[in-house]
Length: 506
Image 1 (spheres, rainbow, N blue to C red):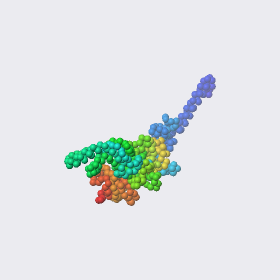
Image 2: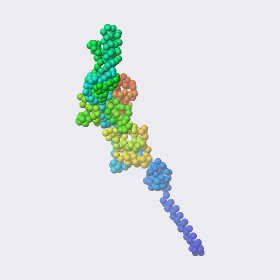
Image 3: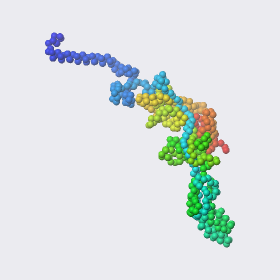
Image 4: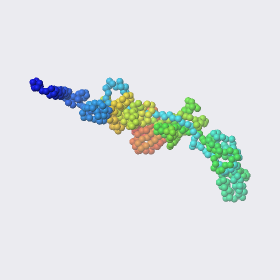
């Protein structure tokens, strides 16, 4: 072999050496590859720390799955293995080592029923009582002979004189009436009297003319009610026509309170709801009233609606135009509540992170209602007894999003097996505990009744107004709003439910 190599020309020797080096490199590469892959896919799984690899994925695009390892087509990074029984497998969601929960600052709270009392504080202004306003107009035209020194914003009592009018039209008609009356013809006398009445002469003046036998062409216009003169349009020497407005008189006892309620809080206001107000003019005092109207239009500039309440005004201490700080006390009702800090608002939907017994965390979509006192009402998406994350939930939500964990839908609420469910289960056995109370009916619907009831010591409930589910219209037959009743109810997972209700005799 060596002799043969020596017989080669220098160029042939170079070619032979290059070929030998190439063959040696190929053999070494093949040997290394066989040494590095004795188990194929099973070794790849071992490298990832998984007993079994379900699929491979890019953490930045978790919805896209791959059957083999390699480089991500989306990012400059290697694909990651998804292990069977891993942290995103099943409903357990994101899994965190229990020893790390405290380090991450994760805290949870139980979803429970409670009473939400979201007092709404807004600003308002006192105003004249628009339903207690009188327009002063003469029934006949004439000349203003005298006024009585009144000015706008003066207080005036009912029957007080405002102006004296000379009515020339009455002169001839009164003479005819006196002449006819002297004849004793009752039919003509009635006709003449009716003519004076049509000319705008009051019955009292006609009777006075009949008794005295002398014409009276001057009439005194008086205030039809007590109040403040909000407009005055009469001066001495003026000529006025029949129906012309001489003055406007507005009452303010009770006085109106008009509060500007933001649109977002409009649902917390209702007609008949009690309100209270404080005024800088009377520090330390609180004035009470009730809502009588919610005006139908909103203010475009401030995005508020106007709520009108009527307040007693003894002594006329409250003056129109005064500024007030108004508190609306909405209807109190039992609701499913979570700490407000547990709620995650993404802009498209509202989520909470629920904690499972196995240590997993999963996002759940919820529909929320009112918020007050650091607690938020949950209308759908959770069950009483579930645990929600109140601290560290944004970190968990981010991990769940990267791992592609499905969000639990609102209609996927499971049975929690808590005390509320246990009490419902007892409906078929010993039956749930029944509570007694009495109150007044505020509203009746086909499936519920709203009651303003007294305290329920067994449940540590104060006096409040809340809705109770009913068995249907037959259970509420014969009852109406305002009736005083005594009733029995049970606590179900969906809220309080009427068992029996009876009207009290007055």
